[in-house]
Image (cartoon, rainbow, N blue to C red; front, side, top):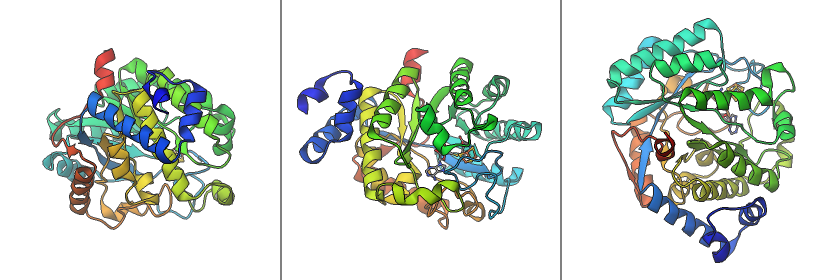
Amino acid sequence: MNQLLQQSDFSKSDLIQLLHAEGDDLKLLYEHAEQTKLNQVGNKVYLRGLLEYSNLCKKNCLYCGIRQNNKTLHRYTMSESEIETAIRYAHEHDYGSIVVQSGERSDKAFIGEIDKILQISSRIGKHQLGITLSCGEQTKETYRRWFDLGATRYLLRIETSNENLYYSIHPRNAKHLFSARLQALSDLQTCGYQTGTGVLIGFPNQSIESLADDLLFMKKINIDMCGMGPYVVSKHTPLEKLAHQITDSATRVELSLKMVALLRILMPTINLAATTAMQTLDKLAREKAIRIGANVLMPNITPTCYREDYSLYQNKPGQKEQPEDSLATLQKMVKNAGCRIAFGKKGNSKHYSFIH
Ligand code: SAH
Ligand code: SF4
């Protein structure tokens, strides 16, 4: 194992072996990833206040609780004054940056609403607040427009880099094209965004081999940021019917941690998030993820009244918490992982700065 870890690059078969690591081997993998993180990006953890702007969505991803065909949800869009209050909260608490996330729409009204959020953010943050968008696939013109209005980072998960598997968790139709997802990622990079992607880990029929491919895919397209986490079963979704086929939650969390550790070693200077989905399945998972490679946390700043309705999956944490509670919890957690929160810092991806 030690010899394998000393290599500067991993082949697919190396990655498969590493994803199967257990016991002392796994400990060595985690230690190596922790050391890589400390050497390359240090022990700072950056905060991004997560604003779940709207749960309206035109898509029907088979795993997601806010898919259009889920008629059991109350649909909401935050008002301008609610948005302002939330962004002000993040700014005043020195979060350094925010992520605006929503279901996917591409109509004119939606594009204008995001324009407005970007204008509000720039005004409140006086351009000192990093702004990330996570609003799905858009045209290159829209991406460019939002970039010009101050968004500098974009998160768009490929979900899986295997086309057949992609169509096993998305409807096979014009609204859910794998090729369009790839194109969107390339457009984001062309527009100059710090570009983030990621995958779902442990969904039905996904293999260790395809997760190894996912890691190589992220390296190949040269991403700047990554957010990935376990698949969590979501009620009122088609994939719920295959819930009996997936591994238990502890295994999915362990696999997610291995993915974080390996990506940190493969791409030492990217920003890597410890995701909420990990925390949903294991209260300590984000702390573990930070220790072994993650350097970004996304505390929720969505008004409490909407959190229940932004249920991508079941038992999403923080639905009854106030933002203050989350911040205190996060500080303790980061300290336990041997790191510290870098308050007031945008926390740009070091990987991006190197190549631009
Ligand atoms: N509509 C945008 C952003 C919102 S969804 C988009 O799709 O890009 C954000 C992420 O939530 C998705 O990329 C997906 O990976 C994750 N997600 C959705 N349902 C999930 C589930 N059941 N388990 C774990 N993650 C899920
Ligand atoms: Fe909509 Fe995103 Fe959920 Fe897909 S994953 S249904 S695009 S919110």
